[in-house]
Length: 437
Image (cartoon, rainbow, N blue to C red; front, top):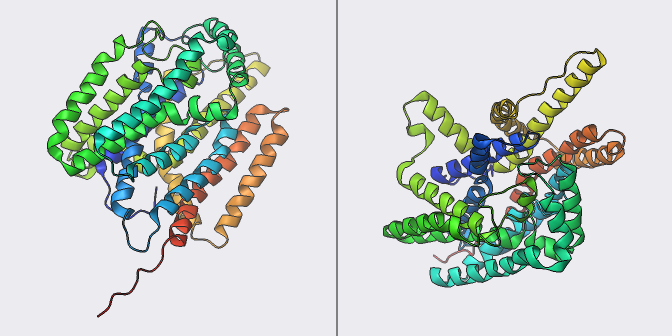
């Protein structure tokens, strides 16, 4: 987040930025695409590393916060961290409205997983003890996930899933029906713990990132052991639970809801860890590169990492803007009897990349400038309320416009959260006791 003047860890910013970039391309391509061919599948599989990389590095951010603030005199670090996570969780529902999602989304996942990892890492247990806890948490998830494949109550869901062609994107009616069935078979607590961006399938990534950072910060010579560990995770992935989960990666968009299978977890976690070890050893910040192109690319990557929350809103807004323009052009062409052309998914991805790269810093500067004005919080709250009202007003008569109106609430969240976090920091900071002469 912005406002933090502490020393940045360039490799962490870059790696989080890489996760954002992969997420950006994956969303731009999957949102409206034909069934993928061979090369498309390879590229989409690479995009599947986006969430794991992002969450792995987010676990490291937990530790950087702890090392800077955990024992700071006069600062109630735990109360602040949990309060900030609660605010993030609740405001994150503006993103859920925008995504029309009945499940936990990425902001709720970041909130609950970072809060849980923060509390666990405060225990200062040895690394092996943390790994036992992490294994037990993942075992709980695996019991549920295997149950989806074998339990009778999920039989209708499995039948609907099998009828969906491989590579189908979210626009398929079959996916919507299957998601409704999955939603109907899981209560709110089950969804919060097990489905989509929930606690148990993702905490492994946050937890491992925190443990890796703490371990190497204390003793850099342990790098070789983490290297062996991450290579082993990556190599064994194709052989894990293949009879129960036949696909190494995600076969359809529906699998995004239940992606925490062993092969996916180990391969993407291993890949995230190896990328971090490379960055920790070789990367020293964009400013240290003489080549202008390399320096520009590295700086853009670090920027996405620093502004990751703003990025999550902006990149969907850019995608929606491109699709909305495409829709209007198509309707004009149809009304005039002209042929309708649609953008190739990879062309759309390129446009989205450049649009997002330039839009994120612009919105970030706008946020920083507006945050200095009077009644900033009141103004943002008003924008969010009006946005939500317009979203529900236009939902049935004009769904594309309703989606676009919902970005007002999402941007309001991205604009106000850093300010609320700063206010919480002030609230939980007291003057340290004066020392005697």
